[in-house]
View (tube, rainbow, N blue to C red):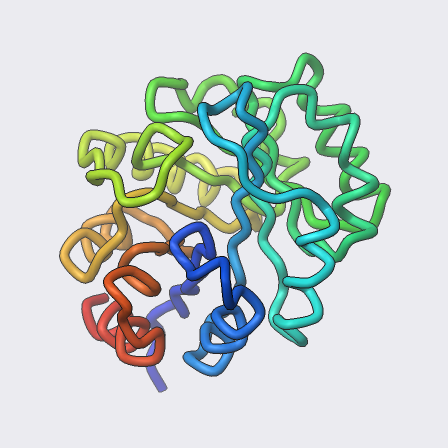
Amino acid sequence: MSSEPHIKIAPSILSADFGRLAEEVQEGVKAGADYIHVDIMDGHFVPNITFGWATVDVIKKAAGHVPLDLHLMISDPDRYLKDFIQAGADILTVHVEACSHIQRTLTHIRDLGGKSGVALNPGTPISSIENVLGNLDLLLLMTVNPGFGGQKYISSVETKIRRASEMLKSGGYQSELEVDGGITPITAPHAVNAGATVLVAGSAVYGNEGDPIVNIKKLRESI
């Protein structure tokens, strides 16, 4: 039996066809997605607007047994934690840059019944969250600047991925280490070699009218 860890794939529906969103989510599930990644943007923290909790409820029904991995790219996320958990979020990830009291926010997510995640932009140092690693179920490192799909992978973030992986292992923490941005069959091996355990992929799964089953298979084969 292989001792290699299972690398999870989280298709990002930001690159899906919104006109057939439920079907696109279901295709991701059929393709073997471990999570369905949902990017929530408010037009303030990032220069784009996507979904609210009513849409999350629809996505949850389409995803079935596959957990929803919600990435809140919004200002003042504490105002909306309960709404997104009630809508069906299983993992709720907030940006450290958007939270005044990150430990309180992460504790609140768990108190609401969700798994807690924190995200860091490419320019945010890993030191900003080292004192809350015990409050995390998921650490998300952005490999692009957030706000839009289809961006180029920032390879210099791999240094931060390695550092984060070392911190989690040395401290005995169980948090998953997720990367998001520019993940393709070419870049995925580099992120995994640096220590990533969850890969968010949008354009590589749904882009260019591709077949999610074929595209997720290509991602898995690449790593």
